[in-house]
Amino acid sequence: MYKCIECGHLFDEGEEVTWIETHKEYNEPMSGCPLCKSGYKEIEPCKICGVYSDGEIYCEDCKKTVKERFMNLVNANFNRKERSLLNELYDCEPI
Image (cartoon, rainbow, N blue to C red; front, side):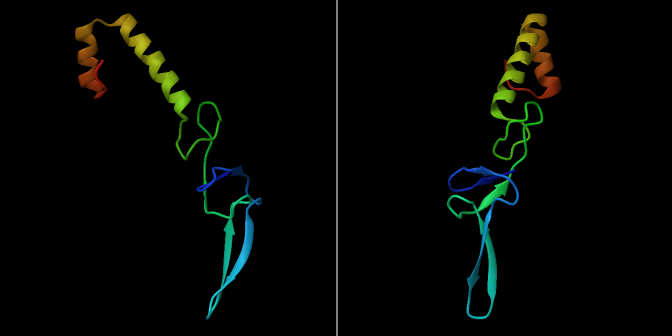
């Protein structure tokens, strides 16, 4: 899957437009977004939910959900001193 850098359009391989730009000494093959002909980048689906994001391994929604679930687990089962120790051991954000 590809995402246009300019307009954000998502498209599959083979849907990009191609053309030749002629220069004095050579012809340069070009390709771009099928909507606006701008540059594009390859993107991967989120490893958890499969939604395509901006080149991240995990989408923002999954990151947020997993972090919230983790914080609920930590807060429910550990007291403040234990959470402080876990924070030091695993170099986490302060809680």
